Image (cartoon, rainbow, N blue to C red; front, top):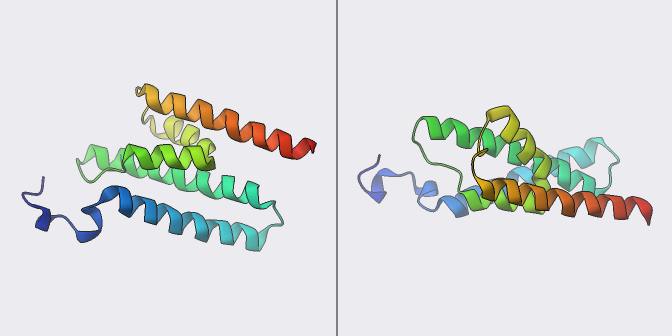
Length: 126
């Protein structure tokens, strides 16, 4: 454990801000790549991109938890799920057996799944 804030890399002194910016960059880059190579709807591209990033963040968080390193803040994982990365959240929970005991993660994933699957059904039927 670092003894002072000077021992922590500058980008990680504010982990929420760091991981939110990193997620934004990764989602936009992934979204651009998906858009460039497919003809998918922008909402579907957003869901796919957010899910991939959320899955990667779940895996990274599990890995860093084992080594007691800087963790991905829970609010970032929740935000990614609520914004549309719910599929990556479910996959990350299953693949890494991570955040399975925390009721808040289950609730957020259920709510975000209902919200976004509902939106997809609505979009398909209009």
